Image (cartoon, rainbow, N blue to C red; front, top):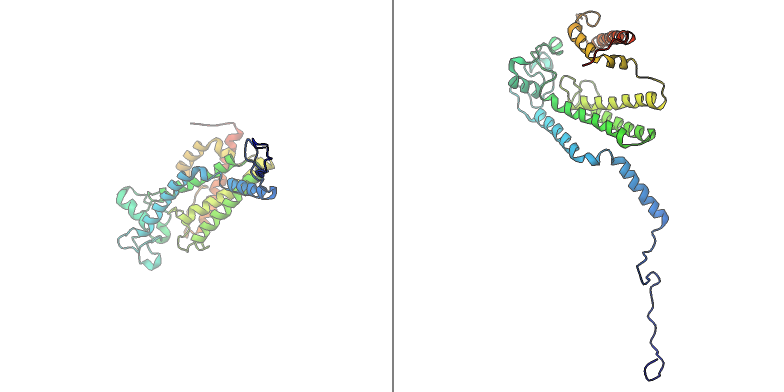
Length: 296
């Protein structure tokens, strides 16, 4: 009532039912929509948790790879076509006899000179000169290959559970293998960037990384998941790796680890290398059986 006794006819102010004296109550998000958002956020986090935290390192690794691409395909090598990746010598109808390895071979010849490796595997089939298969330019792609190995280790560290790890390894296997094979035109010796171990070409290291992921996945299933294999015979070589390495350097050119081939081919060289690996594994197993270990 007013002070003169008349009734108060003012209409009471309507109050929002979601507002009380202390705080504002927000309208609830529908449970189904919130659940979708949560699942999407978890999926994005799971897909990137081994990549995004290391994005700066990834950029550095990709920059190193970019340097390899630019030098390989843009450097002007005297007497050679731009971006040449062939063996030189009598290959390509003898048009580029002094172009072995393209930019990679040229850089090594300028920097290393007479200290280059004199007996590359391409020397006899193509009658080439010196070439270093572990040269300066190939170090760049080797670094990127090592980085992909670090990435594989982060899959194991960041993803918990067998299924999550194997799913991630499978994705990387498919992506890397397709990229490597695609750069080579899904062929052995052709494509924009042929598969070439002596050059440590981009297609070679991507395909090698993809097959490495595949091998790791198989070993993970057999050793850790199913526990059907203890890692042999590789563990025997690992127990005396320095001894095997030194012995191979001293006796790798002797029979039965090596032998003369009148007409060497990729297949015959592969079979010879396979026999050599078996022999060194047998030696390593015998040392393991005798409990003879040498460590540095």
